[in-house]
Amino acid sequence: MNPLLQKLHPYPFQKFGKILAEIEPSQKHELIRLSIGEPQHDTPKVILDALSNNLTDIAYYPATQGSPELRSTIKKWIESRFGMTGIDPDCEILPVNGTREALFALGQVVLSPSNPDSVVVMPNPFYQIYEGAALLSGATPKFLNLGSSNPGWELTQLDKSTWNKTKLLYVCNPGNPTGHVMSLSEWEELFQFSDKYGFIIASDECYSEIYFDEGSPPLGAITAAKSLGRDLTRLIVFSSLSKRSNVPGMRSGFVCGDAAVLKQFLLYRTYHGSAMSPAVQKASIAAWSDEIHVKTNRTLYRDKFNSFVKTLKPHSSIQYPSAGFYVWLKTPIDDVEFAKKLYTKCGVVVLPGSLVAREAHGVNPGENHVRIALVATQKDCDEAAQRMATLMSLGFD
Image (cartoon, rainbow, N blue to C red):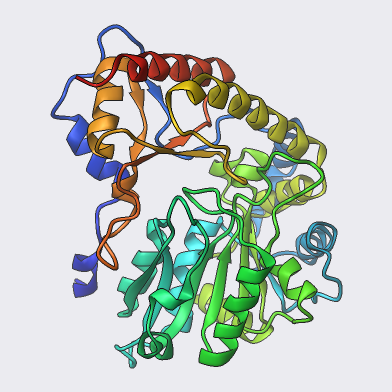
């Protein structure tokens, strides 16, 4: 067996599941699960129709690079959403089976087992796939803590020696779990570091289409690069239909970026067997071509956030995220104990923040926070907020 597998940590949900298995849930309430970021809104009919109408396409092997029609559709969406023209769909765009597998696979491509001193930098708290990609490639994960009062990137947390060893840096923008959207100045500094130290930036933007102001979509890496007069050198952007279009089970997304990197990524994926089903490609074309269902989706999340924040505001320091569908709530007591109380007294399941972070630079930046995914129905989210407000008003003794 690969000895590097022993370095992998259990997923946060597994850790918390063991904790919950030792205690009893509330007997007064039906469980409302807000711990996993799995979209639960209805899948749009336009996507379901495209999927069901093209099932005969599964009679042949798909190309790993995807169809020209799909890549062309993605190119049009990128140009409309991020404002950068001139992207070559034949060498700067590659369909992937959801961003999760692609984020992991990129690490295996750009990190060399012959260089065991390689470093992979990532935000903290973070999506655990970043860490797994680093560990299974033989690299060392290094963390940049993102705080609550100042959720932005502070690159000086790591010294020059660490940056000299850095080969890959993961960005989650908008952030999971904080919802932080990087500013143009943050991007500029990050690009400058990439230029200076030569590392690749992997920008995970799977939450980019969940936001609250229709006139102000989150700034993405491609738009930032264009605004700063840059091309896509050493930049790979990941996007997905899972959250945008409520199709997490379809496993469809894309990467866009540096043609030299994607050439090697395509080679790896050809051997790895990562081609997207032809029927899923047709459904993806329908999804990327339609914005009506995406706006409807944002309205559903906006309504849930408005109600949830209004209910909890008198009892907590709750704030709207800049984007995404997570509430990153500061807790009045230890985050694990807070989550256990919600489970035993309210029948509400959330995820302790300390479990989605690592101790780095002397602190665990997820401590005294919980991540609440507002993915359930409006009714369930409203009910969860009322139960939480009641408990917080009564205290935790």
